[in-house]
Image 1 (cartoon, rainbow, N blue to C red):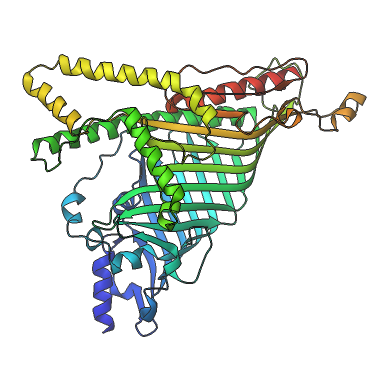
Image 2: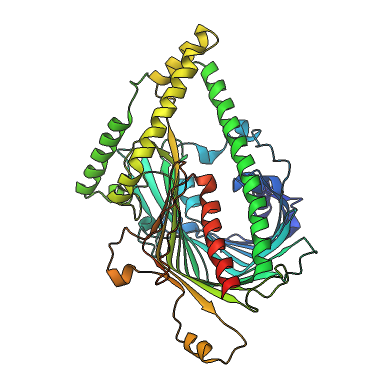
Length: 536
């Protein structure tokens, strides 16, 4: 009996584990417990499993020990528990992007998890995972980094984020709409991050960051007919973060950021080309789609608004917790950055040993990568009508430009067949405009100057922690929607206005494309930081 079970385990795990042998597996069939030791994971299978971006490659992945506990008599209500010890994953960036693996498309047709959502899917989705001593080693052309987590847990929760003993409370099903909502959480108590530059000409020490507790809540909506993922919501929350940098380390971090963004842009272009190829192939095959009348932004907006009003009036839990569109959310309660000018990259400083502390309160970044233009945004987090009015004018202008380009492409088609293909795509609603939108909110921003090696009276007065630059939302009791960053479709950025009389600003709004959003913010922050350090 044990040998039969071992052979089935080897058959299932051989896709993910290299050279798995029966002597590596210890089983206790009646207890429902199993243990594997000293295994090497298959890099390509892991890349496909986690959908790793094509600008990253897994060089090596090992695991010291795997322990599995299966509650045979309560699989419907209790999760399968998996414990991994001493996991090490080595990752490197790719100058030549990886080719997306399409060879699994044929094998996926035989995958039991891709059929109608049933008992096997519920068991797999309810698995609880605990990892101890997890290490990521990242190597790039310009930098290297490591991330160490002493303990990481992945488990199912209720829609409120509460961990419970039964899996029945972790799912919300709507059989009339053929969808099911699943809720998971990833948590760890502490993490150690270390990064250093490969440019040895820069005498910069490694950047070290120790984070506090973190929670990642994941909400998934799956189709009951084919078990595919429809939409998902990922929310990352940190309590407090503290980062200490000198200017040389800051320069190294910016160089690493530039390298990563360059690879991300190339990967994005690759994904667009592949999506276009898939669309071309699907057009060459007989289509079973029923033609739909072309929709406009106004009709989409009214329909989405109607759906949202129905959701508000409904008492159905599915309507209340529904994931309308895919989104990513990042939140930090308090983020302190200490920047010290103690390197030799600048020789003409106005003040030696200058330092600056930047404090951000309730920093949140909400990203909606696939938002259909003209549809409702009422389900967005911290997004009000005032921000909607600010972007209506230029968003409408870009929609008009897109329509003009579409009409031009149809009129300039090389033959009637191509023109008919575009017309057919419009009728079937296969050509639609989507936005990649980012909303950034900061409740408060304070910059403190720090003076060192001075016992003067002026230095003693600075100990009162008088800020150099701060927002005046509290002083003027400004409404909640002010003092935010916003990003959406491309438009030129707006500058930061600083009142020189009291060193305060009332509102900072950035509206730009997602590709240049972080660049614009870094440009303004670096200008303030270096001007303050050099001029204090």
